Image (cartoon, rainbow, N blue to C red):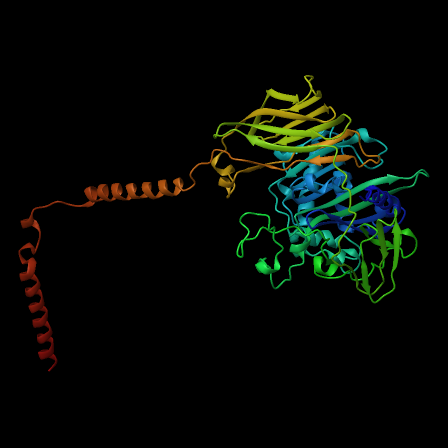
Length: 586
C-alpha cells in the first residue's frame, strides 16, 4: 500500500511555497475508492498592509478589500458547501476540515469594535455587503442566527491586540449554493477563470459533484522581520464521480449498458440472461481532465511565478506504476516527489494542458488516512411537541482525543439542558470537562451550546438531550413550511491531537431537518370565502327588508294590466302610435 505522507507533504508544500509569493495556485488530484476523485483547488493572494491602506491593489480584489475596511473586519472566513463527506469511504478530510463548512453558508469573522453593540452593527454591515457581492442570502443572518463562540474557533492570523476583536459566527443551513455564487468567486481571482487551473471550474461539473465546498479566508500574516501582509486564500474542494462526470453533455440522463456489456457476478442464485448483479471493476478507471471538467486547462496563469517550486501548478497523487500522460502542444515540466507518489507539472503558457490516465490494473493503491473522529447527529422522537437530539462520536485511534463540540440552534428549538447526558461506551466517567450555555430568547437569539469533552481511545461517545418545539406565528412560516426547518450542523474542533499550523482540525456533522407544527395554509382562503358568502346572504336579505316596500295589489298603478293581457295591450298601443305617426307624415 502507498504511504499517505505524500498528501501531507503536498499541504506543507502549498503552505510554504504559496506564502512566499504574491500570487500562486495549486491543484491536487487524489483518487478515492469507488471511482471517485478528489480535486482540491487552492489560490492564494498576498497584499502588503501599506498598499491595502492606500487602496493600491494588485492581486487582492478591490471589491472585497473595501468591504473589509468599511466593516472593520480583521479576519474573515466564508464557506459555501453542499453534500456530505463520506469519512468511512474517503478517509480524512482535505485540509483537516479547516476549509470545510457546514451545509449551506457559514461565516465567521473577527471585527474591530469598542463594544458588542458596535461589533454587531458592523457584523450586519458585513453580512449585507457580502450578500450583494456573492449573490447569496447572507443578509438573512440576523440576531437569531448569530452567536459568539468562546472556545470553538481560534484566529489564524497575527493580531497585535486580540482583546479588542469580537468574534461572531452565523450560518444559513437552508441556503442553496449554485452558479450564482461561483461566478463572483471566480471574479475575485486575478485570471478570473480565463487561464490557469481556475479555467476548469465549470458550474455544471462543480455542482454535479458528490460533495463540494468553496471557501474564502482573509487573515493578516506577520513575518519574523516584522513586515505584515494581508493574505487571502480561496479554496474549492470537490469529490467527482468519474463515471458520472465523463457523461457527455448531450446525454445528461445516465442509461444502463446492455447486459452483454456488463460484467456480472455469476455466483448469485438469480443470475440469468436478463438478470445481472454487476461486479465492481478491479482496474482503475480511465479519465482525463477534459472528460471530468468538460475542458482542458487553458495554459498557465501569467501572474504566477514561472520558476522554482512555485511553478508546479498541477499535482496528482498516484502510485508510481500508474501511467499518466500529459497532452499539450506547449513545453511543460514534470516533477516526481515523495518516492514518485506525487507528480507535479509546470503548465505551459498560451497552450492547453490535459492529463489523461488510461484504465490500468493496479497492484498497489492509496492508503487512506482514517480521521481522528467519526461523528453522526440525528433527531429522535415523534410528534409535534417534543423531540431529542442524539450525537454519536466514535474514536478509532489508540489515544484519547480532546475536542470542543459547538451547536447553534434556532430559537424555536428549545433544549432542556437538565436532560443533557454524555455517555462513553467503556467508561463510567463524565466526558464533559467544560460547558458554555447561552439560552435562546424568542425571536431575538438562538441557543448557543459549547462543550469540551474527552473521549478515550477506541470508544464511542453518545450525547443526547431533549428539546421542545415552539409554535410560530402565521407570518413566520416560509413558503415550504411542510418541508421542515433546517438546524445548522454541529462543529467539532479537535484540541488534542490538533494540527501543527493555526488552521486546526475540524469536523462538521450534517444539518438536521426539524418538523414543526404547521397550520393548514388553505384555511384562511376557506374562511374568507365562507365569511364572504355568509355576509353576502345576510346583507342581501337585510337590505331587501329595509328597502323593499310592501303594498296591496290594488294600490299599484296599472296593476290590472298585468300578465299576458297587459303585454298584448302594450304592443297594440305601440302599434297604433306608430301608425298614427306615419299618417301625419303623409
